[in-house]
Image 1 (cartoon, rainbow, N blue to C red):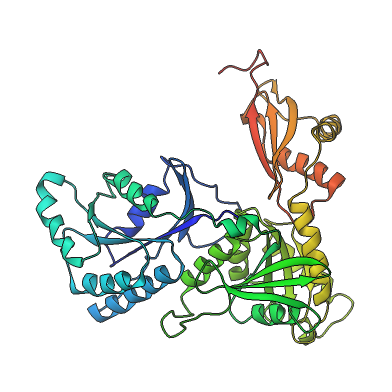
Image 2: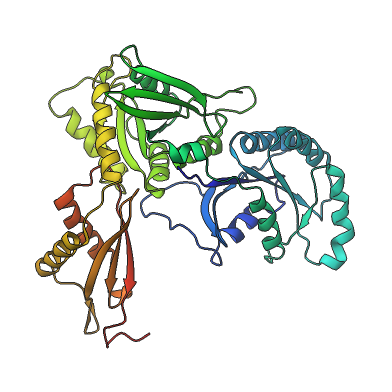
Length: 446
C-alpha cells in the first residue's frame, strides 16, 4: 500500500509558514481539488511537485501573547511534526534573526531523528541577506535554505532537499494481502473499544505491530479465513507531550492512517449525533477516495422507537451529503451489537472499492443514459459522449471522452455516475470521473 509522505512546516508566528504553504499548494502546482460540501480548516493539502506526491501540513495559526506562550506553542507544533511527519521543514525569519525559541525547538527536532530541512524565510535579496543567513548554521541542524515565500524564490531548492528525504513505499505493505481498515473519528467515540471487540476471544490475533505513524497501532486479525489489518488512531504513546486537544494533531493523524487504508470506518457517537467535526474527518477519507463505512456507536444507549433509525440516518446523510455512497451501520462496542456484521460490510465495501467493469458494458450503460436524458448544450453546441472506460480501481476511476469538456456539467457527470451505480451498486466506495476531449469532432476548436 503506497503512502504519501507527510511534510510538516514548523516555526514561530509570523515567519511565513502559511505563505509557504499557499505558495507550494498554489496555482503553479497541481492540487487535489477540494470537495464541495466539506467544511474544514485547511491545515493540510495534497500536492504534486515534479514526480513527487506528498501531503503538506501547516502547523500555524497561533497568536500567543507572551514569549513563554510562543515557546510552549512551538513545542506543541514540534511534537505534532515529530509524531506524524516524515520530513519537517523548520522555518525561521532572517529579519528577526536567530532567537532562543528557535534554538530550543531545534534541540527537540535534532533529537527526534526525523529528517529536518532548515528554511530561512524573507530573504528578498540573496546578495544582501546572505551573511545573515549564515547565522542559522548555529542551530546545528544542517544547511539553511534561504527563501522568499512571498516572492516564491528559493522554493524549488527547498523542495528538492525535502524530497531527498522521502521514504519509498513500504515493501511489506505492498505485498500484504489483508484488507486494511482505518478506524477514525473524534476522541472518545469508542474506536479502540470497537477494535478490541473485533479482536475478541473467537478470533485469531496474528500480531500487534507498530504502525507507520508512531501513534497508530496496527492489529492484524484473521476472521472466517480472511486477513484484516485494523489501524487504530486512538492511542497516543506520549500523551504528556502531545496535547490531545490540538485539532491539528487529530486531523493529521487521521490523514496518515487513512492514507494507508483501503476502507475507513468513521465512528460516530450516537449520544452526540453527527457533528461538523465528524464531517471534517469523513472528508479526509472522501478526498482520498477510500471505501467508507459510517459506524454509529453506543446505539444501545439510545431510546428508540420505530422512527429512530430513519431519523438518525437522515441526519447523517444531510451532514455528510458529499458522500451519499457511504454505508451506515448501528453498533455497540459495549454489548457487541451488530459488530460481526461490520466484517461483512468491510468485505463488501472492499470488493466494491476494487471492482472492475468491462468497457463494453460501461458503454452500453452510457449510451442508454444518453437516450434517456439528452446531454446539455450551450449556444447551439451539444455535448457528445463518445466512449467510457475504467482506468483504475481503489477508487474505481472512469475516463469519459467527449467533444467539449466545458459542456460536461457536474450534474450530468453525476447522472452518469448514478446510472453506473444503478447497475453495479458500488456501495461504500466513491467513483472518480476524468473527462477528456477527443478531437474527431470537427466542431471542436482547439
